[in-house]
Image (cartoon, rainbow, N blue to C red):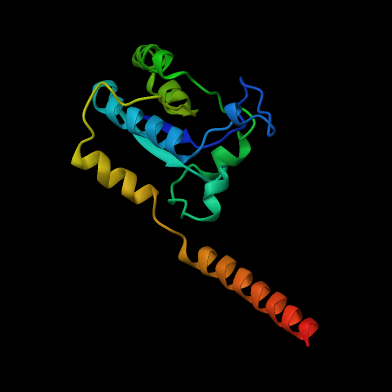
Length: 169
């Protein structure tokens, strides 16, 4: 079965990312809509969907699900293309047709597709309960990182507060 990995990244090989321009930056809502669209497409195009958040800043706060493609993503982090949602279905359909014509050896080498996408609106299908469960698995908070950062910030605030009060005396 073909595998599509939706890599949450703002560094796509076919779009120049400008950190000073927020229109070239996809936030969590943009990428969630893209994930929902891919989830909806997977049943009709018959692919297995994985989501990898390791290359997006949100990965500091939510757990990255484990999968067998971590090294593949790390090795190709500068080669992940962005697809506009309206070109995504034709692209995946064409890839799927090409794979049907390949031998099984070729299929194994070419069945993993890394990409990123977003969607302005989810208008084609309602969000199913299965899709909601899939999304909830992606949004699992990384409590260790959150607690560490929160503890650090609180500790820093206490030190600042003590210095402030000491200077008032």
